[in-house]
Length: 92
Image 1: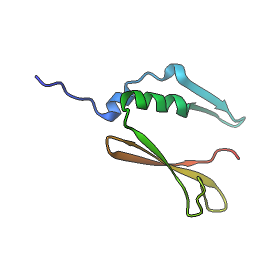
Image 2: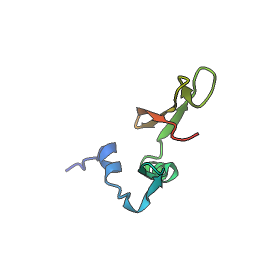
Image 3: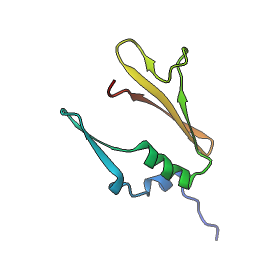
């Protein structure tokens, strides 16, 4: 009987991250997050060919702005499928 390969989501979702959750207290709100370095290391352990992209704007900056706020556009590609996220710049 052939072994069924787990999906990318199922593989990553099964990783216990509890001991790696960090908290940032802004004074107004507490934010829980995983460090990018730790999370990326876990992705690469499971999917060595994974890549990420940080998209630049037309001026070559690594962030985007409308004059009122700023964000970064990033993409992670695993098994030829890219997931793009727009992430707000939280401070400075």
